Image (cartoon, rainbow, N blue to C red; front, side, top):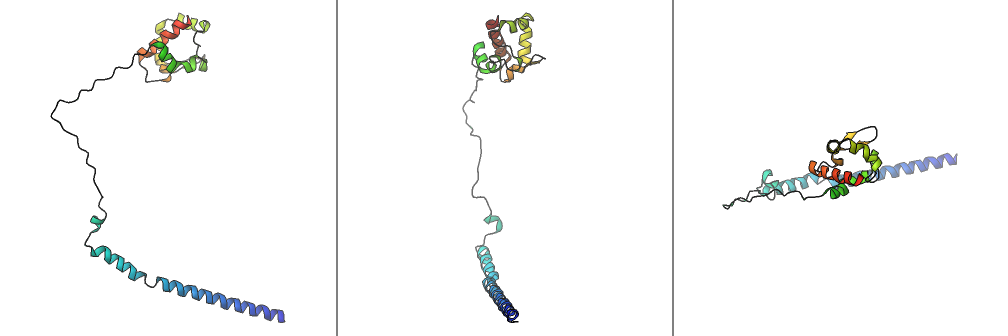
Length: 168
């Protein structure tokens, strides 16, 4: 019986303590937030008392003005830069070497007379067309302009001439 009485007393004390802590928390919360409306009113009046409107407070700090400089002198003439004259070897080294040195994707290797003989026999114009436009066969794939669309047709033809000369 004493054990039951002991647990009732402990429960009562804990309940009263929890209630006291809860009341203390509520008191502190109310005390802390009691003057919030006054602070909001003061801050609002500080903003509006300066006479500034919302538009003035949010206006941009500065402006960027982009205007063309007008001069009365002759306009500057820009000449198109002529592409640097590269020979077939330079173009081969820049664009073709990756596939034609290793034989990637069925590409005939540079200097391999056996692989090039059938292609050269079809004529140089056929080789030019295949290199410029690309070709896909069961033997492999040749992307247009060797996969470099920045090359001109003349540069591609120079590279083909270089390869044919080295592979005859």
